[in-house]
Image (cartoon, rainbow, N blue to C red; front, side, top):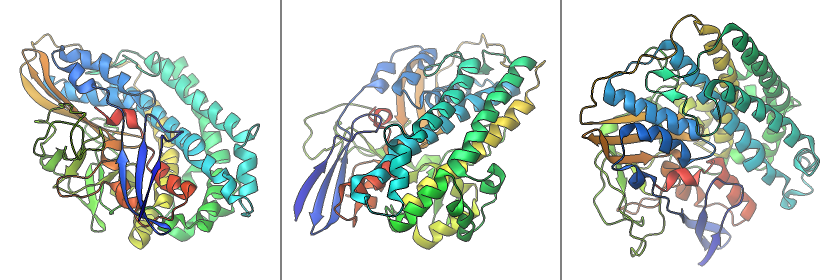
Length: 474
């Protein structure tokens, strides 16, 4: 046996280290460490509830809108405010633009550059990737332009990105007129052209119609980066790399008048199941927090103890019914019943292949959804409900949504109009969780077991989960 530490990782949001135990040429076990504490949950205690709308977007610089949406939904649940239909549509558009921008950033900045690694020189697909992603290559210019257009749409609707205050309980502060809708549709057409011609290489409708793994042959044969990536994925056997327990969790997102196209649920034992939120808990056995039994986030606390014996991460260990779960685009697509991904997961389990493919299918879905929400805006109707003047009563509520990288939940208790407890479980909290009191590893720790001791291959597994460490460390 020998040991190896990978980290600090580059090209991730926040700080990350992975401690590996090696048995010959393979990883026998892994410990994932989030080495930085931030303290947002404690900073919120004692503040008026509305301050959460200002504070929580600053948790992250790449999924800031997702944090805002979770806080808005929490306050709406506490106050009983029903959002205006237009407000929900605009909030969905802003949120979808951020999530689609995150998908592009993950693929082109975080994941794909490893395919141009010198270790793969000589592979038949390597020169193509190196030419696209290397210095002066066209990929950066193309995806950055598409990302900038998406964030320009956020800027028009939300005033700024990140850290907007336009998303409020009851809707959004910004109305849209007919000229602005045409402008947004024009910008969206530019994004659609990038997604269809550069990213996918096939029309969006064809991507959304994928039924079986054999249907991916059209993508493989295409001129898009999805085809390039799939050809490399086949050669590197990504379909069997990075399996992590095959329990998938998602919260509902993109609510509109009581409906949510992305349903909440647990996908386990090969099928979708209801999600019982009462079975959530966070375990701190191996985290740098004061010892305590596993607690539901509605009853949890964040009490740092950097000298705790046996701890190795500032991340807590979220569990559902005492078991770890993976979250992200793959979880959402499985729960939405995407047939091609369902067949692939039933064949080989969750993997680097299915995590990346799920994000590309979702990119197509988001472009189409934004177009539908823009078309559905009723421009003469309100975009926000009038604020209530009823004093806020004491209580507890949750605000749940989906960031690009998975399920995001905020839980808060209020006493006398001020926050007495605020707990957050971010997507990376699930995926990068440390061991719990029973020694159960988190999803990434499971996924790394058995992987060959090659840095670039280990990084493929780590990056397939798209870590966002700053959201994770409370």
